[in-house]
Amino acid sequence: MFSNKPLLLAIGAGVLVILIAGTLMFEGDDQAPENTQIVTLPIPEPLPVVEVVAITPEPELEPEPEPEPEPEPIEPAFVLPLLNDSDGLIRDGLVSLSRHEGMNQWVAVNDLIRKFVGFTNGVSEGRVVRNPVEILAPSGKFLVFQLDDETYAIDPKSYDRYDLFVNIFESLDSEGTAALYRLVLPLLDQAYSELGLPNGSMNDTLFAAIGRLLEVPVIAGEVRLTRPVVMYEYEDEALERLSPAQKQVVRMGPINTQRLQRKLSEISRALRVALETN
Image (cartoon, rainbow, N blue to C red):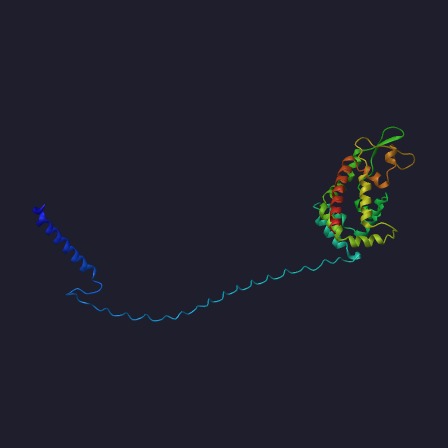
């Protein structure tokens, strides 16, 4: 044990040296070690105070108002001519509603509105007023052939006389015709009032006339006639009871009757629509 004494002394000396060195290292904050140069650093000058200026945002510019569109020019209201001066308007209107050249001949007469009103009123009452519509009368004679001593029949060739009339009437634009009727209705009413009828109106009269013509039966077969005196009469009592205006339609033949009634129905529907929107 004593033989190790020198070794213990050496270890103790080493520990002592370490402790002294550590003490010197941790005491550096209180006392500067010898041979240490102290450097004094200059105190930095304070930064200049920057004045904070509040920046007010510029107000947003309102967009310039768009220029108002110029008002569309107002078309002057249509002014109807006087009844006595209305032929030009009716001619131009009807010619523009048909592509058939025969329309020019139809409207070549004068006092068109009064003649139309007079004819329409006659048909509504079952009569045929011939004077206003002489221009529409078919050319040629009414043709019949004899079956026996007392009975005749309408010759189908006689129906051809009405082809031109039906062709022109079918060529009319139905909606345009209704619009023209509505436009000139004040003149039609004026002409109707001149008839001095106690009741009714132009509209009622027109639809009554159309209704009478639509009631005419279409006779597809042979139409027999008798001739007790001078004028022919229908052998069929139901046909003979028809009004003169309706009998005239039977004389047009079955094909022309169907064409006429189809066009009348079309115009009647267009008229009701046009008058309901008035």
